Image 1 (cartoon, rainbow, N blue to C red):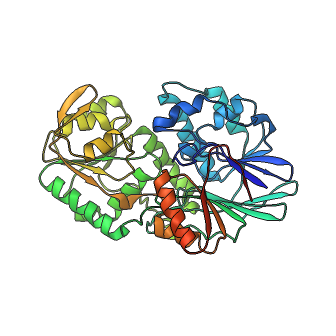
Image 2 (tube, helix red, strand yellow):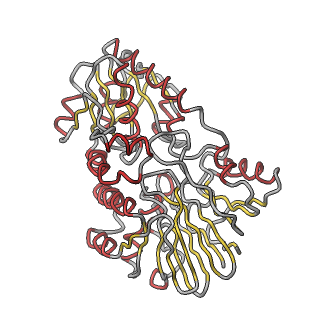
Amino acid sequence: MRIVPFGAAREVTGSCHLLLAEGRQVLLDCGMFQGREEGKNQEPFGFQPSRLAAVVLSHAHLDHVGRLPKLFREGYRGPVYATRATALLMRIVLEDALKVMEEPFFDEEDLETLFRHLKPLEYGEWLRLGDLTLSLGQAGHLPGSAFVVVHGEGKTLVYSGDLGNRQKQVLPDPSLPPKADLVLSEGTYGDRPHRPFPETVAEFLGILGHTLAQGGKAFIPTFAVERAQEILYVLYQHGHRLPRAPIYLDSPMAERVLELYPHLVRYFSEEVQLYFLQGKNPFRPPGLQVVESAEVSRALTREEGPMVVLAGSGMLTGGRILHHLKHGLADPKNALIFVGYQPRGGLGAEIIARPERVRLLGQEVPLRASVHTLGGFSGHAGQDELLAWLEGQPRVVLVHGEEEKLQGLGALLASRGQEASLATFGEGVEV
């Protein structure tokens, strides 16, 4: 049994891992490269799609499913296994990606071909491919997210996918994996643990309270899948403690996800399920207004505060948030609150460094608004949670992380007697 990484090797995006075992080839995720690496999406896969026996997905984020339509475009016609939640969320994610791509590498026909080949696989259910068996465990990262357990040739492989932050309340905690001969594990936050979540929520509410009390606007760049809904959940629980103000969800994609959530109740934590059983939707706080059109979005930029604005993109790579910031960063009453990862070299990282002026949509804008970074909202496991999840595993190969973060996690694993290494693109690892 061998596993060959064709993405997310010493980088965060493009998760795609080829499993070779029992005479079969199975692909674990098929993600899009993003940011500086997006040119790789146009390149060949490094394997023949038509020779794959199956594809198994961990979750619906674009960096784990974004090249699936390309896989079908290049000849794959086999099954794609995923939880029902992943399948439903993936349709929203991929349809949106096709709309905004500057250089599309798939089309609507490829999408429809993919959707016809989706097969449900739920937690604990065994998938048998000849003498190879696979199953999914709870990863706690998105509704329906999973880690993958593979048995074949007398060996056991575990692929983590993305592991969730156990401190958060919306999703179940990740389950512990079985002991394996090899674990292919993410290490996104391998360099540090997260701040305690209650402290993060308290700081968030403090920033909102101060901003709204002085008539300001709170701008929150959010990812449309999970993070936007997570913030709405916090506002549902704690909004009564804040000055009264409208909450604008200015993201059509996030609204599609919000409309889907009541159909995914069994994938949430028991706390969230209880709200739904009581006839309440905890992702729709009082005062929530969904912004449907771009015209209404632009009109919002001219209105006075107080207000809370959630808009994409979460990394400021485009979307409606840029118009809000262009018109709002010059006002010291306003606040920009980052609740998601900002990559090096990106606009978010530039703003966090507090220059006097920022270039937005072709215009120089004075930066007078307050700027806040709340890493505790991360959807990924922190260093301490990764170490706990990997406890007792003899061999670990690290993926899905910046190289220095993976090295830091690898050193800690080695210090407690585990064999740890970093994956290299295209280089197979024996299980």
